[in-house]
Length: 179
Image 1: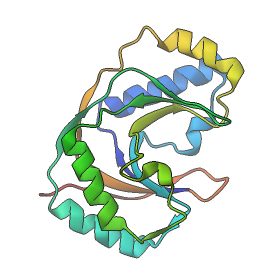
Image 2: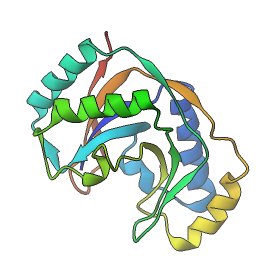
Image 3: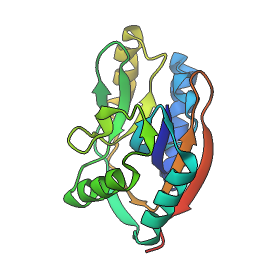
Image 4: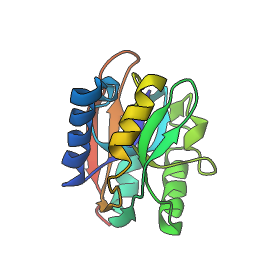
């Protein structure tokens, strides 16, 4: 799956890496490293028309100003492939911006994930997936539950992560907001 994302700014970029390192050392969790860039996603798809996507993102970034978002607590997507994450609070500004992104890139991806559509989108910063098993959930949650994940940071870029099935993701482009 390819991803249209925003990379986290410092110090949160390194904080998340520290959490990944800690979960790998203490619990053997390495699956998150398939996408080695700390981010939250606007949309993911099986593949994108990369040149047209980059043009659309450049146009949107040219008129977009950086804005702040907040995170709170921990979340868990349940099911056969659970995901541990830090939820990004969906403010009216963030929801409106997501709709603009969705409209700007509409039709540029194939097999777009419906979980990222404006009515279903749960923005998040992934901490563990792939090798995140039921046996590991309890110990990891006990370790993380007493920590604060109340962050505030600026969203100031679009990035495109190319991640063909079974390979580590590659950061193809980062486009700063210029509006």
